[in-house]
Image 1 (cartoon, rainbow, N blue to C red):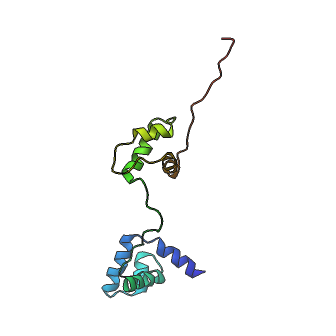
Image 2 (cartoon, rainbow, N blue to C red):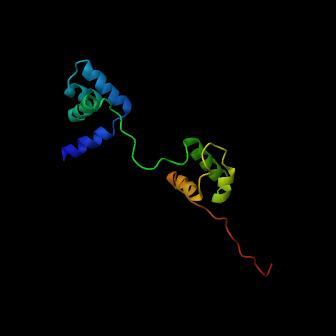
Image 3 (cartoon, rainbow, N blue to C red):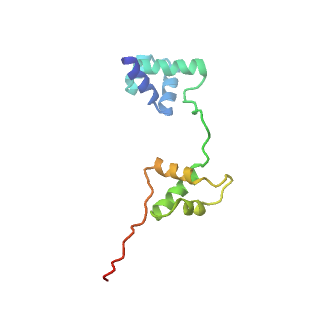
Length: 133
């Protein structure tokens, strides 16, 4: 059980903390001392140092899979259009995107980007007309 907790702690290290671990280890500090100084387990420190020795890096590798069709700038533009007019359709969001080097993202991609930030599609309220009025 402690191994699982230490692995989780290791994955939660920031790149800055990983660099501090490497620097302090190279300065001659012990794993236990570094762990106490940073509030981490000495096994977390040892695992970070081991990765530095074997792979020459301490950061996480990028994930495998298909690259994203939109960049951060386009994602912000999608959010901006969707929040400025909540009842805007996906097709009109597509038309309002700024020109870029990439192809225009599909409606499904726009829907995915909006759900990533917690926005859902909204439809305008339809009111039935009252025949008596």
